Image 1: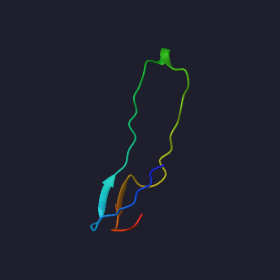
Image 2: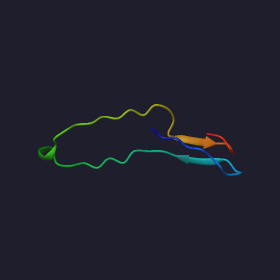
Image 3: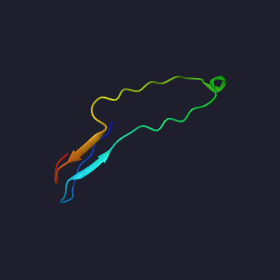
Length: 49
């Protein structure tokens, strides 16, 4: 989960993402998945979350 609070006086703009590091298939012990729910870009007004 990504939780942000803008304590500044100007709008905060940015993007979130996920970095995936791969390994050879022969080394895989457990598999995982991910879900992106919502936009990857965001704007947070001053003093808001």
